[in-house]
Length: 115
Image (cartoon, rainbow, N blue to C red):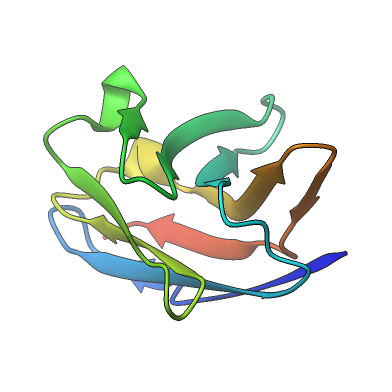
């Protein structure tokens, strides 16, 4: 099993920045995909960004040009740098890990964008 621990959420004003981190531990496969999803109240969970262990990235259209996902394979940690945040980015952000035959979710971290 894989354990995921997130950090970095909080309250920020529109136009501000936050950086989320997610550290994975346990049975880590060398090839995996880690990503960030978010869920706003009364909405479905949606993909924000993902990155493979080889560095290939994928972004939701709504965050392209504002968010950057990166990872440190030596630390099994994925980051999400969020710039120019908007009120519609307000949600609980969840870290996700996927590999062949296994996967897991973090506990979630709240991001609130408000003046």
